[in-house]
Length: 131
Image (cartoon, rainbow, N blue to C red; front, side, top):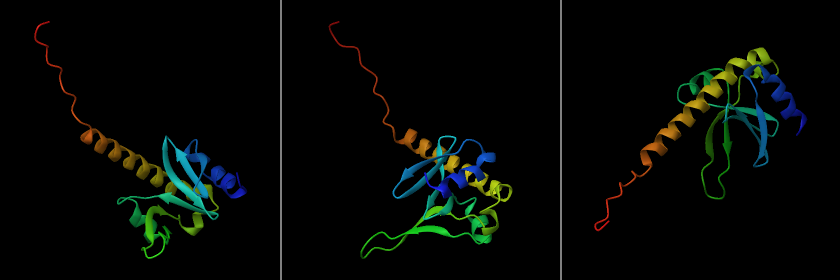
């Protein structure tokens, strides 16, 4: 694990047990069973949603955008940088990390609801004739 990832995990300690997992050349940050952040090229991005994205935008955060390949438009993900003043200050980072965790938990709950609705209903077995 690189130093920036270790340092970020230290900053996030007040949030609770956050762990990092290597993925796609970067690191996914997990807390309470959900991915609430990522680190790519020594930059921290935190999960956002419709409820939290405006605060990240207003604070000067930037979205994570990746190149989708030749002839395709860049893809903007739902992960944003926290404000610059929060990058090196655990106390300042904590409210942003909480927003990220809340957004990740909401996304997980929505995903679970969708999978419940898509699950096919179990058919009742009909009694066989002759038994």
